[in-house]
Length: 137
Ligand code: 5GP
Ligand code: ZN
Image 1 (cartoon, protein in one colour):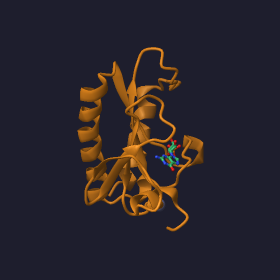
Image 2 (image 1 turned 90 degrees about the vertical axis):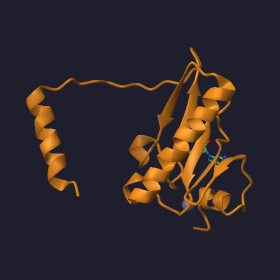
Image 3 (image 1 turned 120 degrees about the vertical axis):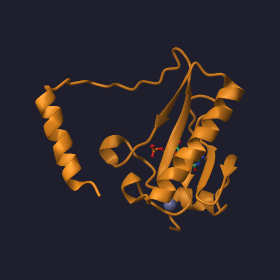
């Protein structure tokens, strides 16, 4: 897609600081990094979000993420590391070309992930699981 920033990065039309490239993925530094070592792993074809990934692409993304995470650990020795991935506006996605954030973390680095756990009863969890099983391939 000619108007997609990550398609243009994959095609080399927009410069990026590349970390890793293979048949299915490109990993490059996030221009708005949270901490040094903040890398994006994008699939090469234009796939908007996780719903459009085929199995091979999905596997390739995590393989690249694990390799890059090990490199980030070696180079930056972070106190922790988060994987972050957004799909759709309510989830905060801003670039509609699938990518996974690798974010090295340090104490008091200012990043906030709020997680308002609701702890529903077990029957509710079973009902939710049944709904999902019914539509899984
Ligand atoms: P999202 O909000 O979709 O999860 O993440 C999009 C990310 O892409 C942001 O963290 C932003 O900094 C990064 N980004 C946007 N445009 C560019 C760009 O042109 N080059 C690079 N390297 N990163 C970009
Ligand atoms: Zn794209």
